[in-house]
Structures are given as C-alpha cells and as structure tokens.
Image (cartoon, rainbow, N blue to C red; front, side, top):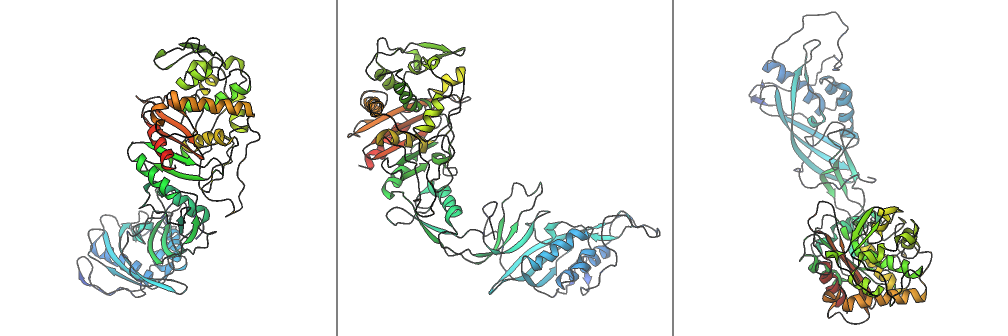
Length: 556
C-alpha cells in the first residue's frame, strides 16, 4: 500500500481469526460467574472534568468488581461492533473510537471473538480471535492482549486506561492497523547470464537487492502480496520502529530484473572480501560502464556503492591528470619530491619522511610522493581539482543513476591547506570503491562512462556524462604513470602476475581516531577496472591490492 517507510518485520505474530461474539467466562479469578453484556456507560469517557453537580467522588483502590465490570463493558461493546460504546468505557474516547473504527475499516478485521483471562489486580488479559478479509482473500488471526482499569480523578469512575496497545500489543500510540497490498512487489534479480542473485548465494547483495526491489518492483511486472501490518504513526515511540507485518494473507509474485553482474566475478569478489575485515571492492567494464561485481565484508551496508571515505593517494590519478594538462608536470621530466612542503600553514610530509632527489614525476607518482603534488598547489586555483573531477571523470555532480542508490563522490572547492590536502585525497574529498574503479576505467578507455547495474534501456533513465576528455598526450602519460606504478612502484607486489595492459595506484588515507589508515587500491587490466578499500587496514598495496588484483586475474 504505497511506499513503506521501512522494511516490515515478518512472522512474529501467530495467525488466527477475529470473531463477532464475546465469550462467556465462568469462574475466572476476579471476574466471577457472569456473561459479558453490551451495555455501556452514558459518560463520554474523556479525561475532562465533569460540569454536572458534584456527587461524592469515590477514591482509593479499585475493587475486583469495578475492574471486571469495566473490562466486561468495554470488551462486549468492542466485539459487538459498538465502537462508540466501547470508546465511552475508556478514559480517551476520541483516540479509542478512531482506532477501533480503523480496526474494522482499515484493517479489514471481522468476526471478532474476545475471551477475558484471569484478572491480576487492575489488569485484565484477553485473547483475540478473528478473520482478516481483503477482497477474495481471508485468513484467521489470533493474538493476546491486555487492558488496565484506572479510576478517573474527576469523579472516581473506573475506565479502561486507553493506549493503542490494548487493541494489539505491537501498536504504539499513534500507530494503526492496515490490511492491503504489501507495498512494493518482490523482484527476482538475475545476473548477466540469467542466473538468480540471492542473499544466500551472495552475502553482499542484500542492500543491492533491496534497492532493486524499491526501484523496479512495480516496473518489473511483479504483483504485491496482501498483508495485515502495523503502520507507524508520528510519535516518539514509533520514530525508530519499522512498519511491521502481522499476517501475510497472500504472497506476491516477483517481477524479473536483469543486472550486469558477472556470476564468476561476483563470487570471486565475495571470496576476497571475506578474507579482510572492513573491506569492499567494485569492478566495472571500461568500454561500457557495466558493473561486473561489488562486495563488502560487512554486508549490512553497501560501502562499495555508498561509502563516503577519503581515498588517499588513489586521488593522485585525478591530480596527476590535472598537473599534466596544465604543464605543471611531465612523466619523464624532473619533479620535486622533498621531505616536507608547507602550504597554507600546514607542513606536509611523505610516508616515513622519504624524499626523491633529482627524480622524475613518474618516479614520484610510482612511489606516491605527497610533496610532489602539494608543491604545485600555489600554482593552482582553488576550484581546479573540483573541475577536473567533474568535467573529465564525471565525479561529484550527484547525478549518477546506476539502478540502485549510490554516492558519486565529492570533491568540494577548498582553499589553502585544505586544498593542498585534497590533491592527495585527504581534506574534503570523499569516494568509494565504485567511484575509484570508474576513475581507472576512465583512464583505460579515455572516456568517462557512468557505471550502471541495470541497463538504462529498462527504464529509459539518463546516464551521467562528462563534459570533456583528456588530450591524447595527457592520456598517454597518465597511462604510463599507472603502468609504471604497477610494474615498479607501490603497486608492484600486488600486481605481480596480473600481466597484460595493466595500470594501478595505491593509497593510504589517514582518519582521525584510527591507529591505521584506510588502505586503497585502484587498477585496470584489459577491459576491466576495479578498486577496493580496507578500512583501518594500513597501506593499500598490502591490503586492498591483493583483493583488486585477484579480481583482475579472475576476469582474464
């Protein structure tokens, strides 16, 4: 029934039917021998003080007779469908009347049978049996509830202490019961070869499959099931709770959604992230943008698509393209790599304070020299890096439409020291493995192609594009830098044995409060590009590198 705010919980309530006659209980402790009757007090049941003449106000504890008589009046009226009378037996008649009316009208509950249990003090438990009926579908419902009787302060009259939980124990005040279509229809997601994708087979795909259902459930031709559920209202108690399925009357029919995932690569990705805690990886095809695999060691959150993490030195791929374009660097020309460089009153340094004397820019890139990049900050405008990321690599424009929720990176305009930090993937720069896999894919193909999980032909959505490409000369040098890093630089150990037309870049991103940095790795080989991160893992070449390299090898 429309969009649901949260995923419903299922299977926590015993199914049965709600009937129309109230049962007679004999000998129940505190109730005595009696038959429930349908009469109700003429009092309106509200909490406001009476304006009638002031009779003697009864005070003190409620007697057993007062409790059982009040409960009897309320339950008899409710089961008989006399909503106004039932509401009048409570201390909040307006709220009671609204919910009890919805019990029949919105929840489609009929044939209610209420059976009181043994009184305990002022509390009376009762069981409910009924039938939930929606169009041509019916199913029995059964559950237990309870009510408490209180004495109204103004006149001492015993009344049912009204809360929504009286009607059903899973209700919070402000919630309601509704029976109807179960929101979005289910889907059957398929890989590129037609095999079914399930959470059981691929642990990482839980959030992806949920996203596919949300996006394509109705479009894919499925049919929603019918259910009785709790719809949460606006209250402090309900704010953090999900809508809850109480009874499933009929199962939905799933529609089919085909994805671009490669079953062999997805299986390999799942296997690789299982070896490293807090790891995530994504792989794309540079020539098309198709997402071939995505996996997370922690399957509850899709870090591969939605992560927002500083990418560290993998960002130097984008920064290098900027410096090459502006003539501030050239692959084989000498380039400064001092131990330290101060910019914006921050003193930047290299890992273990290394320096490269008389080295080339290619050497600085391969060894991931921070100062080689930050030393060029004084010659750049504050928005140069942002424009490069957006215009060439399609990042940070918040316009990717991959088929499920995703984050397409952020490269905000910054100044002074923060701008310098952004050049090496720190500061305000934020990425995830899918973003960085796309960066390598753009270098490999020469053109940004937005990654996608479901073909845009399915729903006619428009894919994001970049406004320009790198010149042939700049692109050639950038590929040379990544190839040299894969063969002789910080990525060499991980890329050993990958072979072919390959390039790579490592990264380590410092995070406040972490003893170890997040390790990053992005690379391409042939028509494959992948990137990964291991949070709190350390150097990217040692942590994320083997994960990415293994996928590149699997893809042939």
